[in-house]
Image: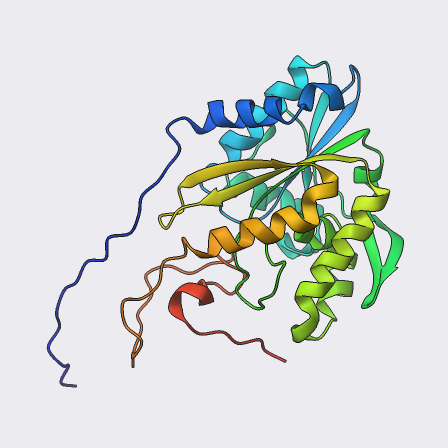
Length: 277
């Protein structure tokens, strides 16, 4: 085979990492009135998903430390729907692969998948893990970014963590049965159902720059999830990298994986969006 001539190019994108992400986590939570939300002895669930967010272990550890300093009992709630094979052992292994462990964070990991139906959305039953309902308080931690399989006012973020992640395999199956064009609405509606029945006290949104470095941390009160996340998604979209051409015949990708994106590689970056089925 005769290959065409190749030209090496380099793309330089804005690099805007936080100077001290750990300190920023503490400042953001304190400024959001976190101390008033955690009572001594309270069991505090902190969500952890399945995506490879660069600073996620560092961020979660700071939340754990602050909960402990207030007299609370932190527990990491695996919030990844049916990922990890939809079984506790698989979800635990997935968290470990992301650097999330009891030894590193100083808090036990809850990877149970038993869930309860707590309400209904237009697409069907909405579920939440039983262990989450047993918490006295829940802190929802997740990255805000455009989803790789659907677009709308609400995509990957805090509400999706509630509607799908904390729903376990049952919650994921219910929402994923929705037709693709309504997935954004499903995420918002399902997330609000969970928000209204679970002891969520705060959300911590992570926004990254084009190099997947933590650029910004934002605390959202539960009543602000719907509108706040919509605004943050617009902001996150501005920092998505993209290929420097609109016309491409062959694309060779170095790495893909579910830890990077639900579709293996970010369709928002490569410019190819498709949902099977």
